[in-house]
Length: 157
Image (cartoon, rainbow, N blue to C red; front, side, top):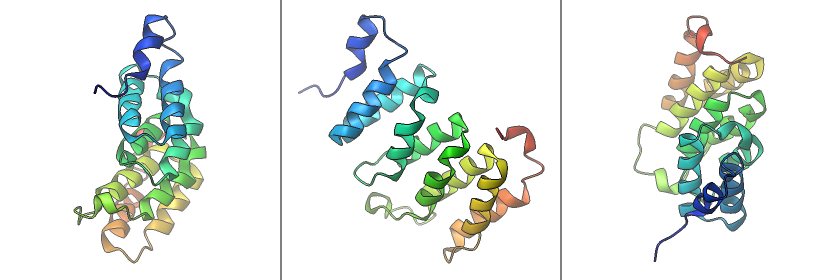
């Protein structure tokens, strides 16, 4: 059975600008991981992740899906400081589906997202992560802090 192709109907109706947001919200409400994968792909392809900040923040904190890296990437692209708390939370999170990853790639991605968002709250979050008992997570945050001034051109805030 072919699974979710939520955005296709909206594309046919010419409502491209509403499609990713609606699909992300539908996937979130239904807690449908497959639909979420499709919706995130459409949002990135159409360059419309910016319209979906509130649902992306909720998805970052949600534990029912396996798309946290994509969600963090979307929040990094949006670059809004309102996402800092959720990104920091996911840096500390331990998801069963990532047990194979002994190097904590999600935490690394989260530290990059925080560094690219920039601003005081993101830097403060990195400083807290740098004190983590997990040496990998702490090292990722410390590296972004050490390069903070060098990477100013990447920061959104």
